[in-house]
Image (tube, rainbow, N blue to C red; front, side, top):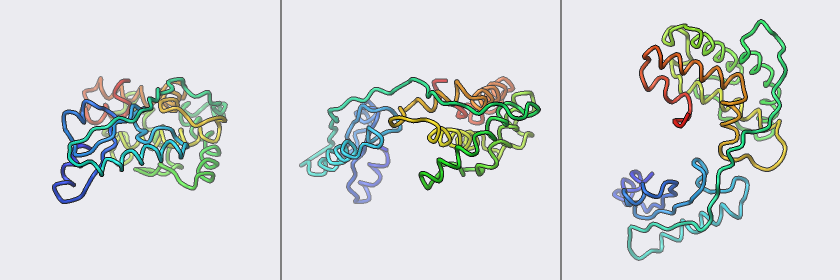
Length: 227
């Protein structure tokens, strides 16, 4: 973000950067930046809170009026991430002959379709569609069991995009199963990796790839770095 701000400014375009890590902005000195002490991935702060988000944007665009720069301002609010995993019911086993993650993903299909109909959009689609998610989990289950990752048939041979599609499918399905306020920043992530058979399968496949000396870029980004 800070680097792009310098590039755009050099081309004559005024920029304002919304930054989540203050020391990075201090070091890279973009022309105008607003730091928000918010959970990563939520540059506007509170999800589904229009007044709060408009306040973030208002403060950011106000930096365009600064007489000189670089300018680094702080949003006064601090938002602490809710790290409690979702409490989300998963479907019971239907076909005991299938790998648990495959059976689970099939069972979540109706919930995913409800969520997609409700929002009118989906983040699934980088390398597969929703119908292919169970097949992708079967492939990762094979990798976890010892099939070489390069021979397993991973969609587009892109482990990162494959896992992102699987996570999007699960997290969007969860939206139609969970009642209450907007989800915390890490709640869905923790639920996926700690509570679902799919999450356990992804972690097991990632571990197998690492142990088999697969390239770092192949296995590392299958999960958040802190995991």
